[in-house]
Image (cartoon, rainbow, N blue to C red; front, side):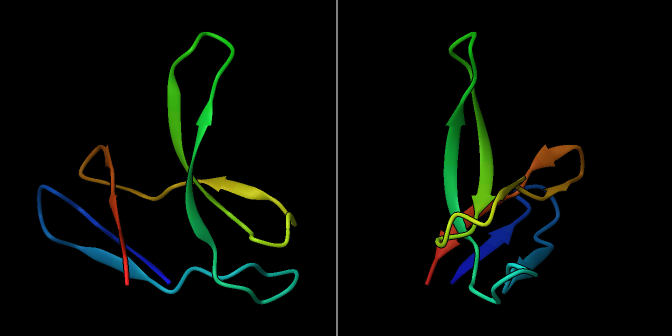
Length: 65
């Protein structure tokens, strides 16, 4: 399970799950066409992916348990 933590204020989110299959989302990186990367959370069963959470105007940093 991935825990996301804000590097500025320490706020955290833990236990993001897919609403389709109930599996815990895993952290991943998506490479855009221009070569830049975006932090995402994705379903391990390929149901979909979302932009990783943000806090204080920045991406929260993932920590695996």
